[in-house]
Image (cartoon, rainbow, N blue to C red; front, side, top):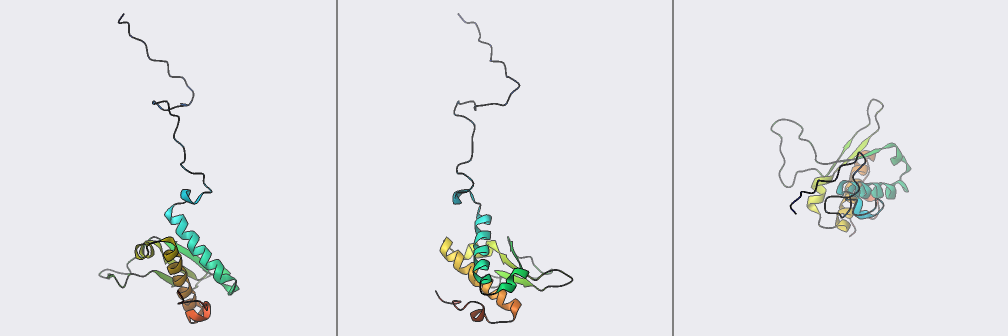
Amino acid sequence: MDTPVPPPAAGPGPRRRDRHGRGMRGPIAPPQVPLAASRAEAFADLVQDSVERLERRWPQLADIDFLVLEVPRLGGAGEGWNDESVPLGGTIAAHEGQPARVVIYRRPVEIRTKGRDERAALVHEIVVEQVAELLGLTPETVDPRYGED
């Protein structure tokens, strides 16, 4: 009566189910659903939407690179920020064959916004300000709706 049952032999093939018999884990949502996008990807999409909106009016923006970085770097030793001086974006002028660049810092922007709509508005405002700085124009010239909200 107390004869032990030998464990089943493990085959050489891939495991088809987990040990509880519920099947292998898979993605929660398909890749084309917004739930599957990471916060960084969603933020990059906001920046791209803002750039596309401005490119209709300013075709020369095609020559500018738009980058998203997590946080700004400190320039030198002893340099610091307080709550009001952390940059949300910046520009890098064109030099030595490199195109001009506009940089948007994701984490400082996310910290200052509560929802997607507020974040999209702030991202667009930052992009407009940085493009205006590169082109030597006022933000109102770059986007006539700048400052409206």
